[in-house]
Amino acid sequence: MTRREASLILGVRESTAMEKVREAHRRVMVANHPDAGGSHYLASKINEAKDMMLRKTQGGGSAF
Image (cartoon, rainbow, N blue to C red; front, top):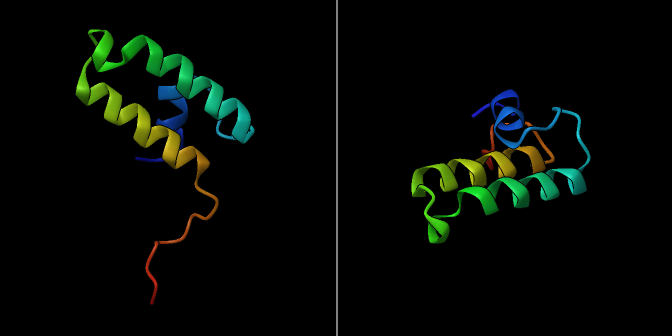
């Protein structure tokens, strides 16, 4: 997932502050949570989007 895709899922801009990302994640997750009749797939994508937006580095993630 790219930052652009993540921002579209959460309804924020790519440059949004971390606190606003958390607020957007909470709002979208409440509306789509599996316990409230939402989809497990959508919930996982929403969480993935939050993780992407809160990631500080854009490196490959390799320790080597």
